[in-house]
Image (cartoon, one colour):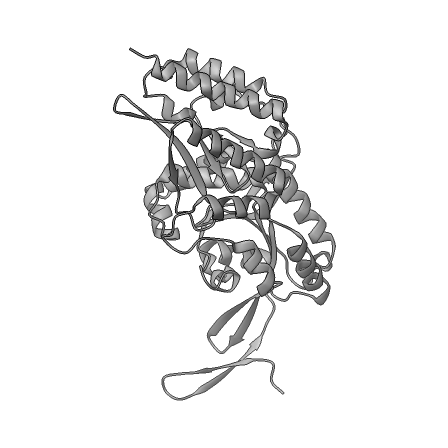
Length: 378
């Protein structure tokens, strides 16, 4: 019985192609770098197939704030939803693929979500684009087929990192049974992180070579639970938003999000709901003297994001002293530590930090003062 596949040529000849190991691990890594579609995005998500843009091979991972990098992941990709995807490549002949590789990958992911910054990832991507003489925004559009704002995409990446929403992919020419069982178990237990294996078999015959990818560890029940996205073009609303937050992060986080939304409504702010497939957003907006002021954004990723970036060209808080005072007040909340370099960015606070009534009141008092200062402007 043949374990190969058959290629029917135009002249009617049948070429039997037999499975063959890769000559080296580096060869498989090079092919992934040049042809990311080998990661089989349509098998990972049948409804919304994953598309990829590569950030780097051998992307370093620190193990502390001051570390330059203790490890390097074989590849770092991003998909169209800004989910960082860590890829480790091994040949099946490498005995480490069975158990040692799993611990290594979990080490990588744990430290990546803690110490990676979106600024570093974005800078690396843009440096690559500059070397290749391509426009970064056009590159994202071409590779990922996204039409949203460039800055918003990187904001999604940052929110994914903060929420621990990353994807770990083990790639090999053949996935051993032991690794398959571990991957299935981890993928069923972990949320919002995802763990999968991609088997890319190589078949060779005459002058032809065929690569056949297969995703392993994808359980339909788990995938439905992890996807949780709205229909294309549909806006989130209070019900769907709070349900997603509670389902992903628990009742305490949902209570914080609901309290912030109720406060915004009570203060007469206009509420804008996003259309994100995977990430729901809710933005309270203050309209004053024909000027739109953004305060913060609520996300289903489990955090509230301060819109300091949008204050830089609006009355009152365009003065850096005002934003610095606002930042200082936020940092007085127990558990909040936003660095000064984020003063013109969009820093965020995880909902659990605000679950205590005193912390939540402290947070809302800051925004009450913000609104008062805007409205007091002559």
